[in-house]
Length: 156
Image (cartoon, rainbow, N blue to C red; front, side, top):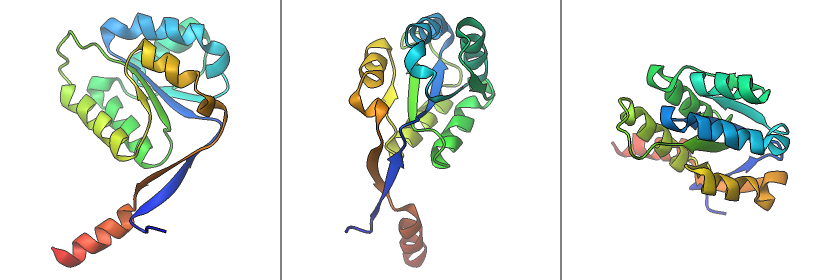
C-alpha cells in the first residue's frame, strides 16, 4: 500500500453543498424542486441566501452558512477539509464578474485537493445525482497530508 495516500469513504448519505451565483439561484431552486425526492435523503448545506431560498421554496432543510461574499465559500471549504462536505452542486454564472471570485476559486481548489465531486451546471448536476454512486458508499484516495507535512518540515 502506498502511504503517500489515504482512502476516504463518502457514505451512502451524502453531505451536499448547494451554491449558486445570483443569476443562477432560480435555476438551482428549480433543480432542487425537481430532484427533491433524491435530495431529501441527504444532508444539505449551502451559502446563506441560496440555502434560505431553497428551504423557503422547496421545503428541503438546508443548513445555511454565511453568504458567499461574506465568507460562506470559505466555510464550506473548511467543511470539506473536516470531511463534512462530500459533494458540491454549484450553479455558477460564467457571464457575470463576481466580486468574490478569489473565494470561489479557493473553494473549487480545496474541493479538487480533497477529490470532491463538483457539478457547476444543470447537466453535470443531473449526471451526478443520477449516478449509481448516489446510493452507495464511494472510496477515494487523497494525499496523506500528515505524512506530507512531516516530510516537508524535515526538509525545509
